[in-house]
Image 1 (cartoon, helix red, strand yellow):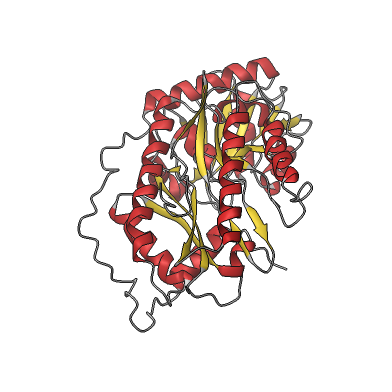
Image 2 (image 1 turned 120 degrees about the vertical axis):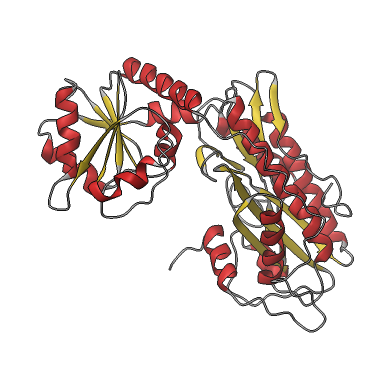
Length: 418
């Protein structure tokens, strides 16, 4: 069975015709006057920042005994080099040596386009359609006298590239680059934090515009279209807008069942955008009309769960202990135990940055200790199968003195936007 993701749902919703029910605002053509671009002054990541990232990675490579790293197109390539490129059967990749400038390997006819986003000095080497790009990688490593040293592989690099390198460089010692890539990317710098703050500000402003416009009879796609339209107007690039109504809210990432806004129904929204590539991730849950006693109780319990997460997230604390603190609290209320339902069936939070989900996670058993610059979601939802679910999600970043919110959680179901 194919698993549905938030982005999958968002993409599907974006493709649906947004036709209004009788008396419902036409979400495809909302009046956005009054919304201004609040991301226009965001400062993009510059060459000095990328050079500093490479220097930190090279220091970790030296400490780990790694001679070079292979990084395919994707967020890590953007992170270190600025190159924004798609993945296909034609390899575009970077080789980051333990010393000196990186090398970019790309098809000959793609070089001009790849150079448009290249943000650091690099040795660019091209390959023709009848050539093997991994031989270029091997050649670069031999020239730099790195062929005899371990080669770190970024964790998302595809097998064909790893296998091709092993064939082109027989005897090469292939190792994981996680200690290096994660070691650098998990600790966000001030410019990264600033972009994530702007992205969050956009999402919160879009919520404040969208939620009052939710009407009886609306479907998830109607609400998502409003949210995405507001996000664009505010200067963000919509990443996902998941909307779950009623019993569907008990399924954290969605349902195929028809859903429609009605009196007394829970509406759970999980939305995010990017600003200069950096992500936001915010969830809000409210009731259309009057909330029942049970809905109020569960909403308040989730609010307290969020507070437990935030309080437990301290410098030096193992990430798994943060999840344990929330799960223990929920067990004391009769939920679970563990990941069982009714209760919290997913991790308490995930890392976030250039990717919506990054290492490391706030999940039971994770031993990585929290450190300054790490960024996480705080989303200890509660899900009651067949009834409803409640998720409040705000992200925070670790400072020297503890966690700091990107967005401040709401404190009442009657004021779900705070």
